[in-house]
Every structure is written in structure tokens, then in C-alpha cells.
Length: 156
Image (cartoon, rainbow, N blue to C red; front, side, top):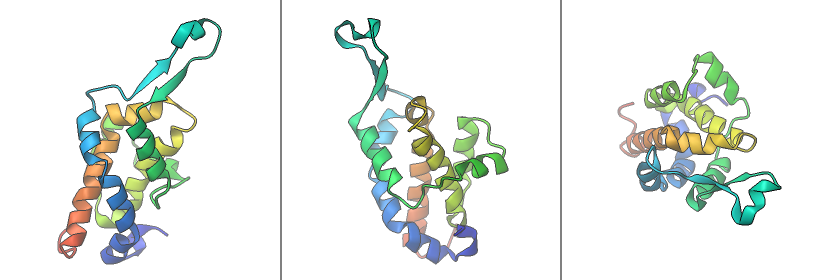
């Protein structure tokens, strides 16, 4: 169900527990976004000569992804949010997320889904979302909307 067809109070009630789960990662995201690596390539003991390299991720990033995957924000049709709004870069996605209201929570979910679900097949997406501040923008905006919801939805 699109959040545009719901009242702000209904949207808040629907997503409240998921938002609480994700905003717990805000301090970590603030610390890591754009500043430090959250993944590395494993190539121990000369294995890189004879085998495929694979990324090794920060444990907190993996917990964030797992928690995000288990929220109502996940949308397999996230591509429509990206294309409908003509978003072509992570920077545009960050600016887009900052402008979303309580009634546009599905748009925030679309951006989050792109990186969380897409990271399952494109390993660079999780690191890119942290490095370019996409996860930080999403969780920061969710926290702002959460605070609005707690204060009675008088503003959006």
C-alpha cells in the first residue's frame, strides 16, 4: 500500500518500530559516512593468486543491512522510485531523501531498498551507500520524521 493513500498517523504507526530499529545505527553511520572503509578485499596467505577475491564487510554494516532487510521499507519495485524521480546519482538520491515527508515514506524505502537489496548482487553498493552518505541520509530523515510523529504530526 502506498503511503500517499494513508494519513500521516497511519504511516507513522506502520513504520514506527522499523524506524526505531534503524535509527539505532545513526551514531555509527555518522562516524563512518564518507570517512572510513567499511569493506576490504580478502586476499590472505597468497590466495589472491589462485582464487576469486571477495569483500569482507564491517560487522555493524552487515547488522544494519540485515535489520533493514527485515523492515517494511524493503520494496522489490524500488527501480520505479528511482526512474519516476529521475535519480541518476547517489548525490541526487541523498537530496531526494532529505525532501521526503511522512506521506512519502515509500520513496525513502525505495532508496534504501536499492542499496540494501541491490547489495546482495552488486557487492559495491553497501560500501557506496555508506561512503556517499545514502544510508546516513535515509536514517537521518527517518529520525526527523520519527520525532515529528512523536510530537503529534503537527508539522511535516
